[in-house]
Length: 369
Image 1 (cartoon, rainbow, N blue to C red):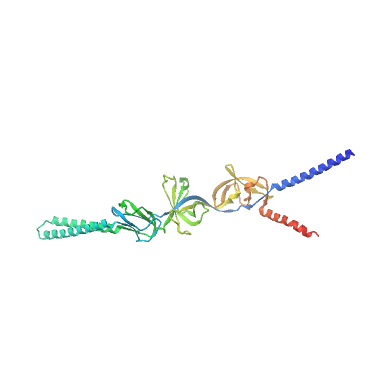
Image 2: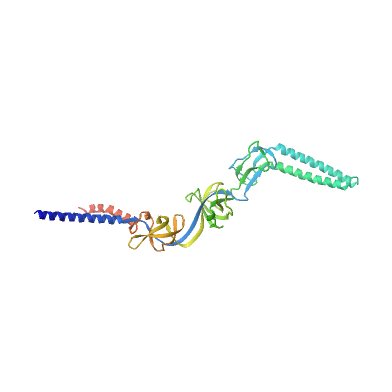
C-alpha cells in the first residue's frame, strides 16, 4: 500500500510539473511576440536639407543713413527707433540759426562779388582797368555763387527727411547734442526689401550654391511658424572673425506674414535631391554605438537586425544608402524595444485581437442559458 501511494504521488507530481512547464512555455511564447508597426520600403525622392539659424536684415540698396550737413546742434527729434515713416517725412531738425546765418552771409558775398564783377567789366571795356582784373572778378562771382548754393543746400538738409518709406532702424540723435557730418544720426530701412542672413560653417558653405531653395521657419528650429520658401542669392566669400561662420543671403519674394528686421529665422537649405532613394522614418533607425541598424521582418513575421548606412536626414526621415532595398518590410514604431529574432505582431492586429478578446466573454455569457 505504501508503495502504491508513493507511485501515485510521483505521478501526480509529474503531471503537475508538466502542467506548470506547459504554462511557462505559453508565457514565453506570449513574451516573444512584440507588437510594432511595420512598413514596406518603397523608393521615393529624398531632399537632403541643411539647417541654419539667421536673422532678417535689410537688403543692400534699400537702406538710407542720414547725418548732419555741417556741425550743429540737434534742435528737435520727431521719430524713434522702430517707427514707420513715409518718404519725405521729417526725422530730425537741427538748430536753424547757424544755417540761416550762413545762408545770409553767402548771399551777401554773392551780391558783393556780382557788383564788383560788373564794375571791373565796365572799366575793362573802357580801357581803364586791365582785362585780367575783370576775369578775376568773374572767377570770384563763380566761387561766391557756389558757396551760396552750398549754404542753401545745407539749410535745406538741416531738416533731415527720410528719402524712402520704411522703418527707423537706428536713432543716435539726442536733443541738444552737438553733431558733425561724420556722425550717422538716423537710419531708415525699406521693409519691402528684406533678406534672411543665415550663418553656416565654412564646410557647410562649400555645399551651398546660389539658387537653392530654403524652407524658412520662425524661431530657432524647423518646428516654428512656417514663413515660406526663399532662394539663396549669395554666399559670402569671407569668414566672420567673431563667429567663425559664413553668411548665406536668402531672398524671400513672398512670405506668409510680414518679416521684421532683426527677427530670428531658421532656414532648411535643400542641398541635394535623390530621385529614387531608400527612405525610412527616423523611428525605424536604431543607433548601436557609432553604427545604425533596422529590423527587417521576414515572411514569417520574424524581425532580424540588419546594419545600415545613413545618408542624409530631413523632416523626420532618414536616407539609407546601403543595407536595405526596396520591397523589404521593416519595423518603425517599436524598433527601439525590438530584439533580434523576435516575433512581430502588427499593432493593428494586436488591437483587433484585444477587442475580440474583450468581447468574447460577453458573447459566451449571452450563449449560456
